[in-house]
Length: 380
Image (cartoon, rainbow, N blue to C red):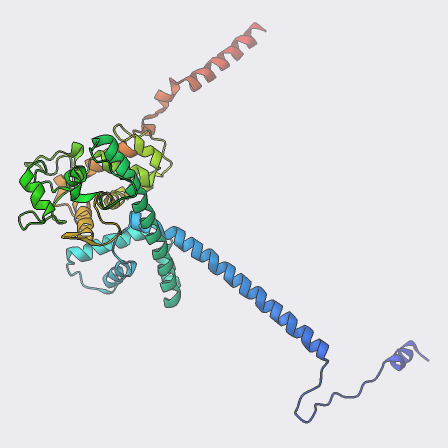
């Protein structure tokens, strides 16, 4: 008998598998349970992975969104910015746009620059995922705005107390005693065209008379250098006040850096130069938040009496971006250079030419060491 015959004789022959009357082939209950458990475990692993991915994306979007109210737009919705860019892409004609549309488009450009990945992501995601992304970005944006207003509420009180020494000191946890009821806050909030020291002006503003309407159509005194206005040149000293520099440093560098606002910055900040190109929008946000901190309003809102914060924001943005001509643009550029110097200090790395470096101690020491080596070689 051959080996193959012996092997075949040892094979256990099973009867053909026949389904029952319902068409089901009977299986072991244990086998079915094991397969079900394995399938559930695989499904659970998938759900855990999806949950982890979703949590990571939420954290990322919320964190990235914190830059929006600081560097893009304080009030405008992200949907409006995107819609304006889409409109321009779809509009084949070169029709002129109005100032509101131009402002929206500049906002979208700032949005794309602040979050460089965002433009492509909007193209790649479906509508539901895109809406979810924007929702999370706005959550981060609103959280950052809340943090900044809370920070300035406390700090502005201490700055006012320190610099003005008011008879009635501001309390960091009390907004009701601020605004026009407080003499120092009232002076800083007073429109540039009026003199707060005039009792008639002061009474008219506090009584909200028709002759003294405080609105976003006036530049408040706190925006001006040394809190002094030249009525014959309202641009002189505008946006150069100490309290603005303090607020900018407190939000964008650190609260401790705001203690030094009189001189130039120390140049030690780690922000890249490319981010300075968007600094005018950062400053617009600061100006709006300082106005809120000085007021008696207890919660963030768009309108405070006759004062519309959103239009105030737009007025400041237009000052920097919708200039009437090259002469005004040069003054704006000079103002931004002043801000760069105040916040970041003076830097002269571009002046470190090879000739200048050759006279410095590192190069001089290297030359000396080389000369010593040559002298030692010659002596040998």
